[in-house]
Structures are given as C-alpha cells and as structure tokens.
Image 1 (cartoon, one colour):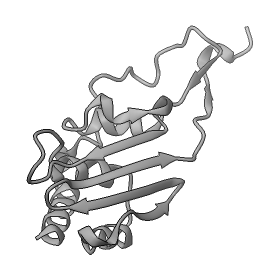
Image 2 (cartoon, one colour; image 1 turned 180 degrees about the horizontal axis):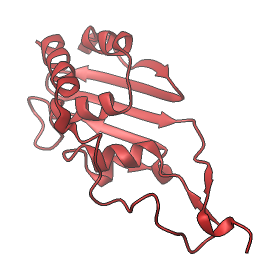
Image 3 (tube, one colour; image 1 turned 135 degrees about the horizontal axis):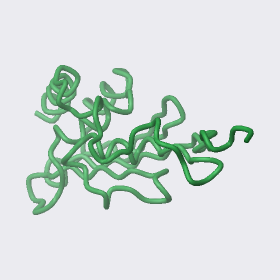
Image 4 (cartoon, helix red, strand yellow; image 1 turned 60 degrees about the vertical axis):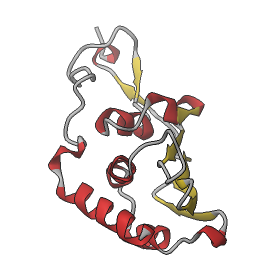
Length: 152
C-alpha cells in the first residue's frame, strides 16, 4: 500500500500544473532594483515551501539548507499529506530512481539514503509514523549581481 501511495502521489504531482512550481505569489519581481550591491539567491528549499502550500515554513532549518518532510501516518495527529511531500520532491527534481527506492522501503529497513543534484536525502517509513524524510542542500546559495552594481 505504501508503494502505491508514493508512486501515485508523485505521478499526480508531476501531472498537476498546480503544484506551484510555476508561480510564487510572495516573491518580488526579478527586475526590481535592489538597495544593496548584491542580492542573495533564494535557497531552493525555501522556494519549495512557497510552491507547495502544504509544506509549512517550520519544515525549513539551517537558513533554508535543510528541509524536513513529515508525512502523516496512521497513528499521527500531525503531518503533511503524501501529495504535499510529492509536490516538494517533484519541485526539487527528484529522479525516478530515488522515488522507486522510497516506494520499496519497508518499516524493517531502517534509515535509507540517496542523493541527486547536490541534495542529500535520508528517510524512513512505517505505516503508523508515515514517511519521514530529511533533505540537505549542499549547493551554496550564491550572491547575484544587482542592477545597482553598475557603474555610475
């Protein structure tokens, strides 16, 4: 059953244009002038929280370099839906090889690990506790040159 839930949620998140990856209503236009000589690029996990409505701000840590996805299990009173977790993982470009490994994870396997594109992920699964994943982004956030950095 777990395999079916993750696989279906990931497939539906890919198919849905409403996952949010195309828009972020809280972000300023990229052409807006900056008051400082450089602007720091937004960490991609911070963008995921903006794109996927069900992923709370509390899921972020370490200045946006860590993202925790706590999917509600059968015995949990709190947690996000598998669809919200799938939105986040699709938004981050998780390859199908990783989702397939997640699909086949059982409660007896303990903590599993994988990585792609500078993102490291560890996860566990139990029907009572749900899917719990911790993602860390090893890609440094780089400053972007702003319009005010031009010669005067």
